Length: 149
Image (cartoon, rainbow, N blue to C red; front, side, top):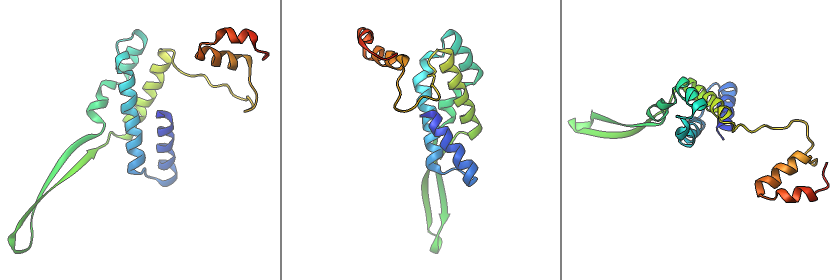
């Protein structure tokens, strides 16, 4: 989902010259979600170096910072009006993109990157495809009974 949010962010930036608040928030949220999912791996031998290199400990301190802006103005007849507005400060895009690259490298360090086969027709299945499916279901014995080469 993080890669999808990055792609949408980049698309809007290239096509429209700016990014909508919703797309920006979704990208930042996906970075925060990935932080939560991988934070426990920061002490892992290989992934820990990447965590440090990309300064991922900064993520919760920079992303989606909420602050209250108070304003006071003098209105008609000298009556003072005060107001409050909730402001969300977003992380700079270059930080979000850097952290996304870091997460991809961490997933690779941890051996969690998913390889995607290219050039297989949608209605074609290979022995490896079937083996992976059956293994994920815990049905490894069923592979012996299959007729897929």
